[in-house]
Length: 145
Image 1 (cartoon, rainbow, N blue to C red):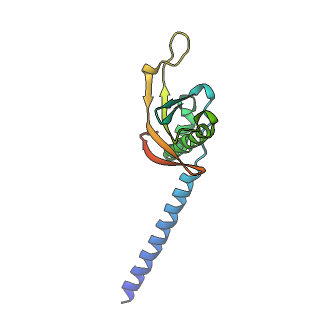
Image 2: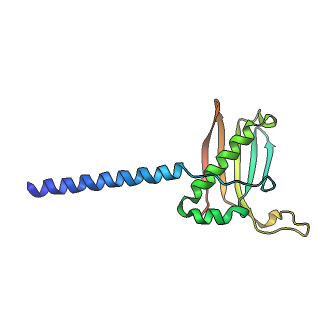
Image 3: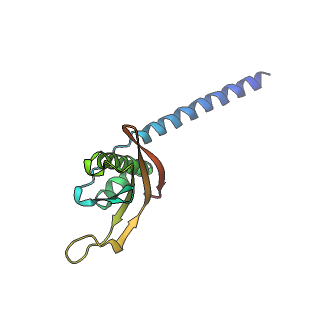
């Protein structure tokens, strides 16, 4: 009997520590600081009933690599920030959602413009208006640091 009691106590402690660690990890993921993407590295356009937002992460790639395992959370926070910003603009007021494409463009043409043939796409993140808020409804991110 005494052995079972000690074993149950150890299991309870292990479960409590696991729950605490999982809570700390998810709190860190939720607090990811978004990247600042220069305006020249962003493209936005109307597409049928939604907007497309393209974010070139190439100039911020070092910051993403430093983020390590939470890099995906940083990208999600960044995409959410720009989706909210663009959906709040009057020119996109009729669009109910935004599809964000995080990309990197690795090459430029002879005029130093982005050569989209050298583009690498990291999936899509879709955000939708829900009342006064903008929420993520689909996450197909495939970024690996």
